Amino acid sequence: MNLYEWLQTVLFFTLLLVMVKPLGAFMARVFQGERTVLSPVLVPCENLLYRICGVKHEEEMDWKRYARALVLFNLVLFAALFAMLTLQHLLPLNPQRLPAFPWPLALNTAVSFVTNTNWQAYAGEQAASYFTQMAGLTVHNFVSAANGIAVAIAVIRGFARRTTALIGNFWVDLTRATLYILAPISLIAALVLVSQGVIQNVSDYRTVSLVQPVVHDTPKTDAGGIPAVERVTVKEVTIPMGPVASQEAIKELGTNGGGFFNANSAHPYENPTPLTNLVEILLILLVPVSLTYTFGAMVGNTRQGWALLGVMLLILAASLAALHAMESGGNPLVAKLGVHGSNMEGKETRFGPAGSSLFTVATTGTSCGAVNTMHDSLTPLGGMVPLTLMLLGELVPGGVGSGLYTMLAFAVIAVFVSGLMIGRTPEYLGKKIEVREMWLSVVTVLIAGVTVLVLSGLAMVTPQAVSSMANPGAHGLTEVLYAFASMANNNGSAFAGLNATTNFYNLLGSVAMILGRYVPAVSMLALAGSLAGKKYVPPSLGTLPTDKVPFALWLTLVILIIGALTFFPALSLGPIVEHLTVIS
Image (tube, rainbow, N blue to C red; front, side, top):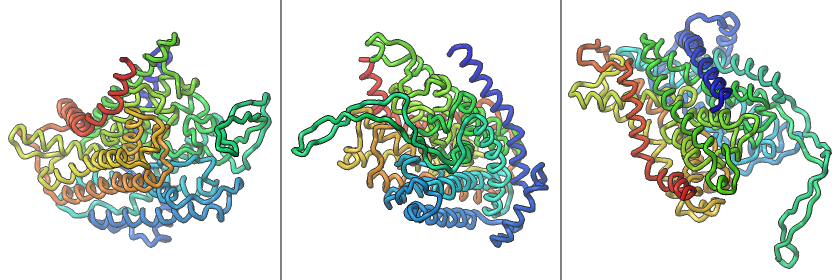
């Protein structure tokens, strides 16, 4: 890095850390029902929503009712979005008269946005109308993110409460996450983005003449079936319009990632300047890192939250350093041609290697999936970094809510293993960790990984799936592995080069997204219910301190060991083999 890049990176992380405590403490007060600075305005709105929907907000739920409300609510959301996509051509705000989505693509897209994955097997500006973007996709960006926060808060209550079966009210947590956290920050962020040039309108697409016509050759087949070339002169181009800033703000804040444009956050209408680039990265990380402080505040020991945040940032910083080193080192094959310097293929020059690397690790360390660079153009080991961040389980710092409860599952496993090593009953936050809690944590941690490996293996033996790979060999395997890692871990980013608009990837991808979202969520709610019913065990001389540096390092080691044991063989056949091929 040069001096400017160092200053930019240090300034960014300093600003991020400064915001952790204020936002984390604010969220703790919101979900504990305490008065906040927004209460005079939002409490009447909140109560009105409860009356309209018939919600008894004073009544709490056990984990089964909470999970049932979560699943049924998301099922209704899925049905509504699926209907909207398949009937898009009949709905308003469609100035380009875009057709309806085919049902396999509509199924995949509806599952994708309901599960906070936002995987897109289509080009946004060519397939989705303004009505679909606003009433369908943007609304789900809010609601799916609020779902994740609600589950995380319920899990926190499981650790904080004693001898009770109640872990909160799903409808209350969902409403407060949307009204008090996501909506206000998104409004401010959208205004900042508009001020920097991100568009926000419902105008028709605009056709403009080029200053200089462009001539290019297009392959075609003549009447006799013989390949030929047609020379085409392009004199004008169509510029897409749309309500971009409003969707861009919540797609980053809610770690959603679905781009209004096919180029996503590399598009100048979504991310026009280095300042907007840093603002969007800040939005991606803000809620996940702040929830660690919320956790500490609600369990009565903020050092517990700082310990988890330390683990997240340690792995994230190491990933950033590794990715930047790989991309700054350039491509050996290009260097042989006499061109030296950073690997700028697939990167925007206005962001450079530092801004691109920081965005890449932020979006794959969380479950965001927005991209400002082409991950397929990264060097082999550079591409392995975002792939590994997803395969670890989306927990550094992970998606809004989902990152925290996945990290807590790893913490339970780390406590249990350490307890076995020293011959004592494992305890975490005054709760004994027993077989039930261990099983639920293991399911949470491993379900996405097992799904990735099984479906990737199936793709390798399915002709339709193999034919979708534009690149043969190790790189093609990496593309498939990345696709299922992205879907099963609810990330949504993708390597280019894989044609995912096929029935195979649409249908099996939907299965991956459902398993990756709801199995961990329900498992952690069950864990919360189990822990909430336990008595508090005061710490003793034999209690492992989980708010100290040694435990944070042990937790980091457990995360890396589980990830290495699960995925190293697959990574060896993909990016590692490709790297060895490049340098040989």
